[in-house]
Length: 398
Image (cartoon, rainbow, N blue to C red; front, side):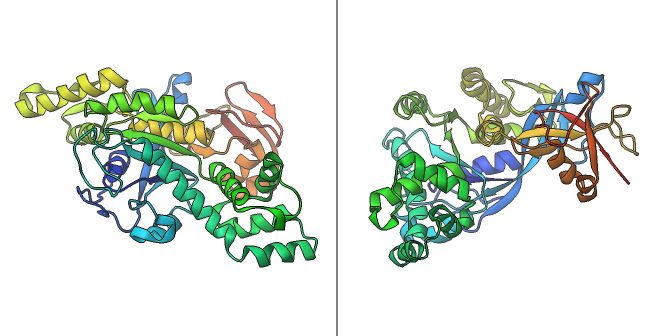
């Protein structure tokens, strides 16, 4: 599972990415500071279920802090897009292709309106961020449409003449974007389109493109630069103007500052929480105190967090509906080295006990006998759909 960070140039996208991953990426106040996609590891924040047994997990990957487990996931930061990207403007085709592998998108926008449509800095409040919400969706829709349109007439005639199944043919054409036959079939039914593809209009194809884009590239919008006063007014307006979108108030710069301060042992900070504590005030400068005080008052007190961790959690757990599953034993949560629940896997919403067995090892899947819910100590079958934060012991034949 890959999370893609996308948006217009110069909206704080790379700052968001660095705040989420602490990766060394170039951050600059001009368009196209990012050319090649950066990749890094972000984290989904879940409860440390070992606490239910009076213990603390010892993750092989990720980490645990103050009752929370941070489960790693792959993230990519794609270079800034500009209007007309689907036509190749601003290296758009390359950037869009970089997004193919992403399962969910985080769209970072400048909610303060201090970046124009070209990604150039302007005075706060001079630009309407609603334009960016529309712009990115339109670019992605036209990208999907462009792929569908490649040789459409010939493609449609061939399907009609050979009596091929429409949904299978379109799914094959869009397979690189994770489009499945079931998705296409459901979309055609939902839109009420006839069986003769040659009768479909350009508007019909665009509607198909939009539906398939929303299914394969679900999106959450990180309303960045909330530390600038005018941003809050824009944020409230955007939620009313686009009631079906998922918006999160965000200050990537604040999150990055807190992560760096924690990294240098200046503060204690749990990502996604509404407060932090300074370890030793005598060891920090007055300027640092003022900066941290500004973040507490203007971001954490006002919004409950910097928004960065909230965006990551909502993208994976709410939009994709993934769940965190732990392998463990009914009689023992530790591995052979004494580590408590060392592993945790992010699984799809409909993942079953058998799916989990295969995730652990192919042999476990092939030789599956049963699974045991460690919390309830009850056995479950291979088709049992697992729940978020389950601990599961897999029993397999030898």
